[in-house]
Length: 290
Image (cartoon, rainbow, N blue to C red):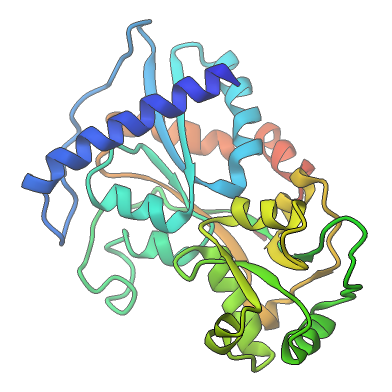
């Protein structure tokens, strides 16, 4: 844990420095630097590779880190985990990042010049073209505290309870993918999110880990999270959302144009698609995209 914490501090410190510099030099319509600045090596002579990844990947990528660094001793992986929306904003503001893995297409599209003007109106250009892949699929699930005190049996029953005002549900903020998927579920059941929030029926979390923690601590009656986070937290899913309810939950990944070494970043991204890495992902509930 100390090693992980040290790495996280290094990444966050680097992001803060770059963001301060970006305030005076970056523009809103493109990447801070379109040129490769050269390989970055740390004091140990290793190459630092910075990976921004959705919070729901914390456990799996931490395990993969050990496997990858053992096979590639010249590489030092530095992870920054958080909500995909926050990570997207940090990249946009100039934070150094070699590989970005989002929990939703929207956040990646907003950085990809190949995306339509409807989703990327300012034509941001941070994604290295040809590197983007749909890496993983997850599930959106309904979970409850141990013992399920309110006896919530399904999404259908949750919708009824929300209409009756008898449950408190945790969900992600609107700027994070898990929150956006939950909003689609509420719309599917013709529920008014704003009214539910005003009535004190919804509790929000800044990312999926915060939602999971609220459920785990029984500060809410239920919550909507990813299947992988339910697994990691030891929560048993009550129900899974269908594609009709919220669409497919796809995790896109790409090398960033401002990567200090696009070749090394691509090699790591290729490894994430390997059988060895995929076995780690599948063990907690991810699946390869068909």
